[in-house]
Image (cartoon, rainbow over all chains, first blue to last red):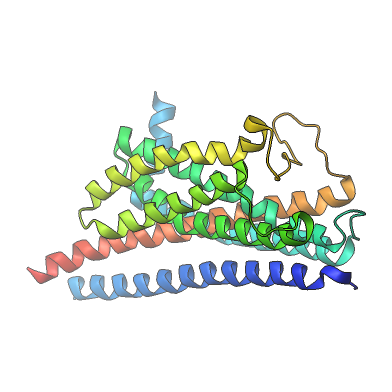
Length: 48
Length: 246
């Protein structure tokens, strides 16, 4: 596939967008996992 | 009355965790699947536009991101009203969860627009009504996130951020209709007017764009629900930690 004279612009737009999307997905999932584990531990302490 | 009562039950934290847990795998699958389909179709299997050349491929990201940037703020507006009127804690947490995702969508819209604008308009940026209102929308997103982080009293934070969300929704409306209100500036009008119909984009480019727009919608909802579930758990965790500290 030939993007012609605008190859840099097209690839830069897609690259920046994937980086931003990847960052929000990663931070969302990492925090979700961290908080879920911390809550499980706190509930185990409460019940134990 | 009974039907309305049953709708609000879904905002009960326990029930919210239940139905969102069941819905999320489907939302992720539909969102990621449609985004992949639309973007691969648009990037690899559509040609160049006779005026824009290959930069037309940027619309497959720019338009869906801008759509969700604006609609994300409308979600925060609705969540703010529900919090202020009905004091449903989950609604405040949904607003809080939506802001970082909406901000990312706004940044994608701004960055891809600037990259597209440089070769097509001859400038990265112009103080055009739509661009300017979109930049202000990004600042409202930032202010909303900062306000949540700055206030430890969660009810007070819910109240103040709700007010900010309501004020900022003016700029969400302006971002959407600026080109029509002022009828000037560089940014063109809406290519895919959902309400009025009569789109100005050819079917050849429209279908991959439409699929990606639906994909971004589902991806946005999935991200917001994961974040809202995390906020519900974080609030429960802080209650438990406070009790254990006594």
